[in-house]
Length: 344
Ligand code: UFG
Image 1 (cartoon, rainbow, N blue to C red):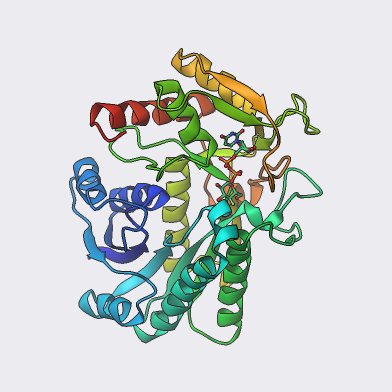
Image 2: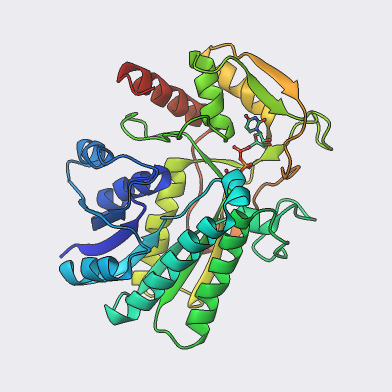
């Protein structure tokens, strides 16, 4: 019998790619999503890719009773991948209580429901944002957690602590915290990808929207940082590689291969790429010339961060293996698909 997994936020950007990889690896997937930042037709697209329709329940993880009902309706759920969360850094500064409520209460509900329904493991979407500006690069999982730059970042830190405290208190659950670096790109079929609401805040959607003519010019936020070309450096990871890390992590929990009941892995490539390098890589990969200008720094930006993924490579047995060029091509193909479909 197939192992049954609950994916919260499963119609979202990273969630949808992970559902595909879970199905490709023989898991049965139940999606819950409140569709606050995604579309229900993502379920159709997933079915188109895998030939298998995941169960979809429109449920908000803040609704304890509704979530309880999902576990009752689909008995035998063995693991949860918890993506559902608010994720806009700027908005979190404007609406901190919304972020604390959404991101903390959802996780608390899930952690309370797991033992009740005999769910063994949870994979939590954490972020390299917990490291702030690391003192040593590449950054390892042992690096100190720095004071969060935003309420959003703080919810990631607090959620990690909530999981640790819950396990330490004797809850029978197992957990893996995946600290994502910067996920980009889209599924190679261009049937699923990132669908930003309004004006994109993140680099890649802004860049591809500029390339296709929706935005006039991409602003490069600062070229006076202490980096080789002066622009900020990040570790851009292909979303499908990232999705695969969740499958590997879920296998590890369910096959009893964990070293500790709570484990942490950096999910990045180990390659630092500057904003200007990324722009040039996009131009080289796609042949599309990009209109951009250097503007002032963006408040709250980290100067440079990239992962040491060695622990994930050796211990988890996972490695990001898609080139930056191939990744950028998928992002561009996705933008062209959105145009073709008249979505954007
Ligand atoms: N950038 C630009 N122009 C833009 C947008 C971004 O130059 O229009 C630059 C930023 O200054 C930064 C880089 O591109 O140097 C990447 O910016 P993103 O907004 O794409 O990503 P961040 O690294 O700022 O943030 C991401 C996630 C957050 C998460 C953070 C750390 O969006 O949710 O990584 O994990 F908290």
